[in-house]
Image 1 (cartoon, rainbow, N blue to C red):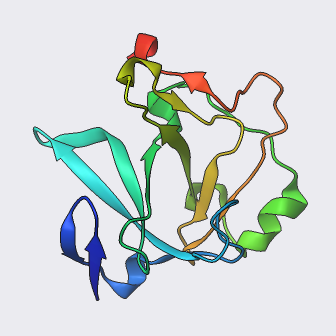
Image 2 (spheres, rainbow, N blue to C red):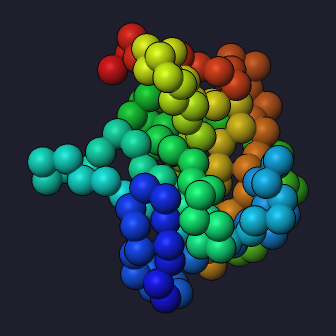
Length: 145
């Protein structure tokens, strides 16, 4: 399928790459279908990727692999909450952090408290709240990179 995007123009997305949020993302509940667009920098994965809505071209969230921010990232989540994603093995889960990149890029942060979790087996996704007290909604990342 062809998807119009704000930052990448028109792109071809395979149906198998559509990620479905049953209840949307908090604040954007009416938008439930997304895909991930990856940037490549000199042959390697870029630091930021994009969670692109496939029905609203202007809606895209910068996302980050949490292990690029904290190699020991390990959010604690209630098992009952994850059951909404369907059947999976631990290795089927992909986790991303939503990033905020303000005009002053030195203040770029990620939300470590509420990661996006995707069951790659069925492409169901949700944003969850980690029970860990040490994770913050606004974790500054520039000084760590």
